[in-house]
Image 1 (cartoon, rainbow, N blue to C red):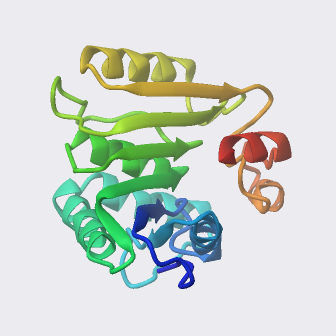
Image 2 (cartoon, helix red, strand yellow):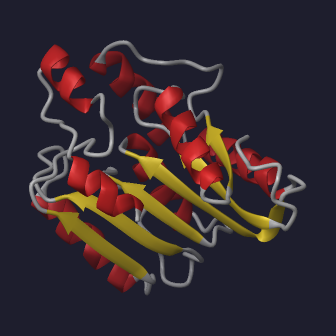
Length: 212
């Protein structure tokens, strides 16, 4: 849990969901950055037991286990929501969620599932789902921050996501950053791209603009 103990007033709470690599320092750093902005933030471990991937194949397997077992993933996310909502610094009706890559897909799915979140923000997240949003089910405002040059999310997936949101009557906004690829907010993305031959990369301008 990250927050500024010097702030006395109740404040919004934000859940932070990690990339497919797992609950690592990147997610915790984002939580600390939110605390500096006056929020209370909790970095959620969606894999459990602090598991982290060392290779894309392992990361893909861990991510698939979550996506394919929503009966486990949803209660785990809800439990984190309850912890955050119950924290003494948080206004209980002011909880949102953000996620990166895999985590972006997770927070979008939790919005689709109708969890009581004020808003969700997906940073270069996956958009595809086999459990589409239904009219009247999504309570959250939705913001998608996408890399226009992201080769891991197809143009058809983008178009299908927009159709899904519109059909379900969701209040959403979709922002695409020209020249930005997958993982554009992570300064480690260039190193990982080279190490594993992945189409990802850090984009400083998109990172800055997406955080504003």
